[in-house]
Image (cartoon, rainbow, N blue to C red; front, side, top):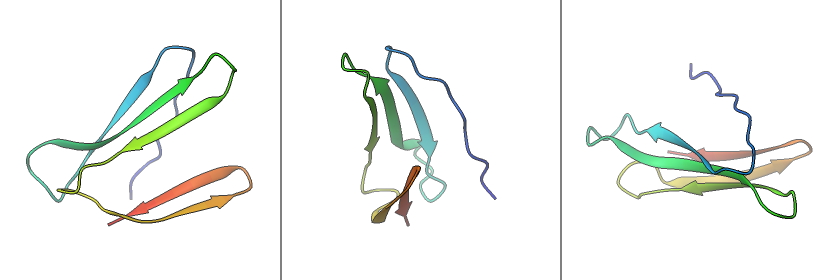
Length: 69
């Protein structure tokens, strides 16, 4: 089971590397988390097709779940 990573974000960009265990070439997908000038939280999921491919994105009250395989 993968444990979630909790982080605090300020105005500086914070990058979280996601290691793709299906590809031995190293880091593949990553998240960029930042707070912009309007105090909006922006989470960007950058992906490369050589590892995981997005299946769906679920938006619920309080969270967003990105499902990839």
